[in-house]
View 1 (cartoon, rainbow, N blue to C red):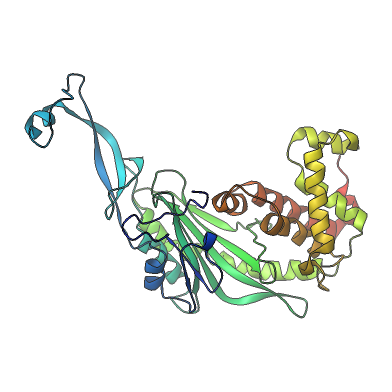
View 2: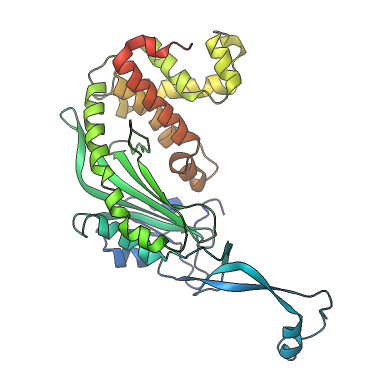
Length: 359
């Protein structure tokens, strides 16, 4: 199943909802009005709980011919408890989601939603999408914050919070500030100067308490949105030639040290066809996409940045939507290339073409 969305075996419904926009692979629910957190939980099929259950194995002398329903007392004698490890299990389906240690604390889906509510006191926040992947071991939520980042006179960038958590023991609870450009849905998850665009919270014994306090840390979203508005408006006034744009794209898309070495030594004939094709696709997007023809983007550093992020969001083919999500928001290729492009654009805005010279 390419989409990898959780499908409830009892209801046959996919665990995903979206407001107005087309749902993931045509699955899940599309709703016309922004739901409350309680409604979003139900629309996305996330109204289930997860609990830790004891693990055990059987001794070597266990008799496979014994019927556990008839001879349960005999079977119990062969059971060996697995100390300090537990299975995380959905209580509605008994689906095993993962194996975790004794210090792992389950953060229920409802607590993840209440985290968002607490950030803005429940006022002005709008839940746009939410869903669960696999058997329900990973959930994700995007919520729109009040206001916009304004670039130029009419280029508006919406402000989002993105949260993902898992019930399988892998990964932390992650909450990130993610601006999304309305006209082309470019996403950003970049570290700006001395600020971080995300926070990570471990599933430890105090994870729920830390989650309830995390809205204080997420005050960085206000700082980030202010920084971005200032930076993007500056970039929209800095011109960049087609030649320098191609160079910036090339530097942003470098995948490894070998390619970097060839770029440094101007051995362009030795660059792989795949790398050149990617760079050409990004450049073509920058030149031809309707979203790149605005006054604030065409021939500007802001447009150069949007060319890279727009390529990953709108052009590049991914194996499935989960792979795209990981690339853009979970530290994958799309996120890393976008962060590199952000740094290059910031340097170009202050240093000009010298920013594109590798030492």
